[in-house]
Image 1 (tube, one colour):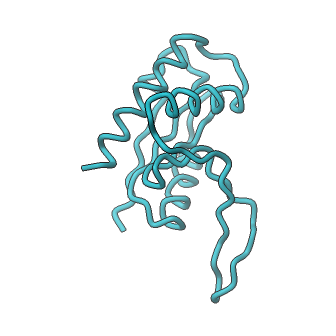
Image 2 (cartoon, rainbow, N blue to C red):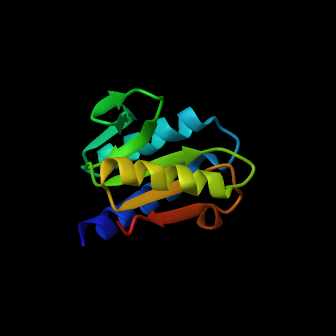
Image 3 (spheres, rainbow, N blue to C red):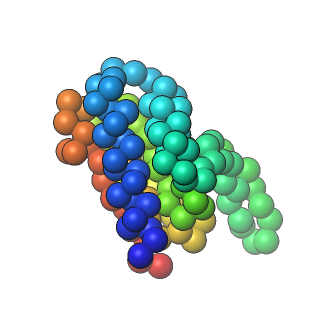
Length: 125
């Protein structure tokens, strides 16, 4: 499945960034470094993609932004917080529903061990 292959590449890229810097940077710095890694792997990405909410056939710009959209298939939400909370996963589920994508990855770079700070989110439509 294409989503799973992309997810493996995303994890690899995230570990590269985290090994280089560790915790302590701003989200925007991690996002830029992760984007650089993903492009270097030959992936097509978009960053800070505005995501309108459609309500009664009207597109409303309510401030949703995808941090990184990989191949328009997998969404990455970059965090640099003390710990992930259920609201972060709910945010990703919202993004998945609005885009029709099935897979997202929330990555909290502000953690000593990145493997414990990444969450896979699946939209089972």
